[in-house]
Amino acid sequence: MNKEYNLDKEYNVVEIIRYNLRMWWLAVIFAVICAGILGGYKYKANHQFVERELYENIQQAVATVYVKTYSDETSVERVGTMIKIAYSNRTYDRFIENTGYNLPFEGYQQLFEPTVGEVSDIMTLYLNYPAYYNDFTIDDEEDAKEFLRQVITATNEVAREMIGTDCIESLDAPYTATTVHKLESYSITEEDFRKGVLKGAVAGLVLGVIVEVVLYTFWMLIYKKPKNAEEVRQGFDAPIIDSLKKGMDDEEGFKKLALFLRDDEKSARTVCCMPVSCPKKDTALKLAMSMANEQRRTLYIDLAEAGEGSSISAWILGEGEEPKPQALNAYLDSVSRSSKDEKNFNLVMNVRFAEYLEQKRGDYDCVIVNAPDVTGSADAYAAAKLCDKTFVACGRKEVKNEVMYRVKNTADVSGIRIEGVLVYES
Image: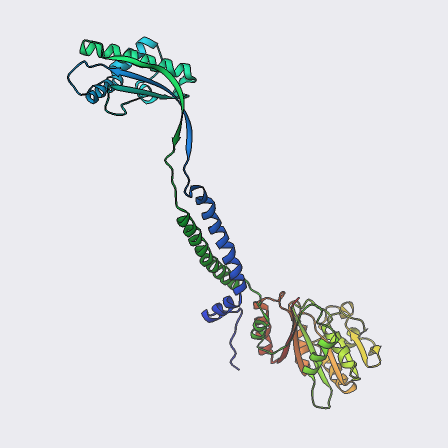
């Protein structure tokens, strides 16, 4: 016998694609979420810049100075000369000497701005306040006006020393004013804004699908339990008898199980229920009750101590007399095991248990054996070898892929044929 030995479910590319296509609804959810996040981010980040002009109120001290015709230069050249003198280090030194301010030369140049607006002999000086440079502050309008007065005085004194005559004269004494200034800021059109939001949403849709595919594929590869009943079928390499959801393990459900296990021969048949990580402990008992309801004399042998019945442990191991089965109804009898009577001896693999089971084949129309869960006991395999038919009862969300493949491998090696699998979905 040449059987392939597997311990886990391996997915090929086609299966991964098929599984992801089945989860299209999850991809839609991720796409919508990511589209909302990226589109919303674009909306929030750019909405404030849509065709919007920003302004701010500026408090200024202003002074105008008339530049005299002290040479044959043009008015622009003379005003330019005065601006350079006002910004010079020599004028700064005179300014500090006159005022005693603790202000560096860089701060002196940054705090005020001399300009010429048009071709004229007028020079205008501006100072925005409040103003700060290191520890030097100009807090109010009086400080601002005084600062400009001292600049004009120092500039006039230095110009007189250099040129030999008075060059400037105050036209308007420093005064204060509030101006509205348009800020240079980033701005986009309404159409560009809508396109940006749409691009963000589309990118989110694509990203959402990619995220879903990556996450779901990663989950498929690391989740070591069957994803559906088909994977259970592949693991045990046996047909699925039924896939029972919550509330479906009723009389009608077990009628279908009994029908699947029915034998057309008149001789009695023995059936082993092999639980594999099964959340339900009464599967074999319900099957026995279903067969008894057909008026077939049925014996229920509980090897998992999950039900009521007379204990056969002591008698199988050679002590006492054979116990009389406990009658559950007119067509259903029950026997069970007792661990305390077994005294660590092996009950199911004892030759007398095989003889007992063979004897009951002739006494009853059918014998249902409830084996212990194979994840904790090898008795399930021993009982299955003694029975004519074996079916597996497992919980899809409880059983691991490795457990399924180990059970199948052990069954093949032991010559046990699994007729079918009853799957519990919850």
